[in-house]
Image 1 (cartoon, rainbow, N blue to C red):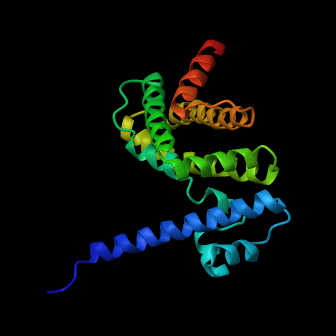
Image 2: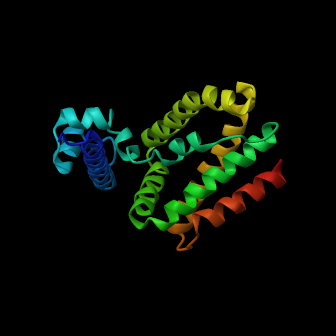
Length: 203
């Protein structure tokens, strides 16, 4: 009897994820010690115990290395289903999806620490801020047509809703890092609700 292929693929996927996390951790350590400009790809690969080829296959650039494990929010967009009628309903659905992911992130101590370290670095490293914005735009571009077709809205409506939800997410994560530096503890989910309320008041 032949062995099913699924478990093998699962093992490969798990190992790929573990290697990605190791690369991310190595990049974070080195960026915190030496800065982005003072760190090379070879140093990150050596610290992670992988070849330069593996690094480039999984990370692409040294700036992107800290975002390897940052796909949960983009991947969650695939779960946006029938949002009802109009841009307001879509925005509400997007907010709900992101709130769930923030709740899951709050419950995952290791991932939460990685995210916090990355957000703190972004505040001091323009190269990382540029990489973060580029990744956000690329993710939106990838999902806009798919979501528009799924929920029956114009692409501009979807881009607008994603832009607002993305701004709320970015503000939440940045404020989370600032409060941490001031010694203030906040849950991501609670802070997200606060940011949403303030943006609604501002608008």
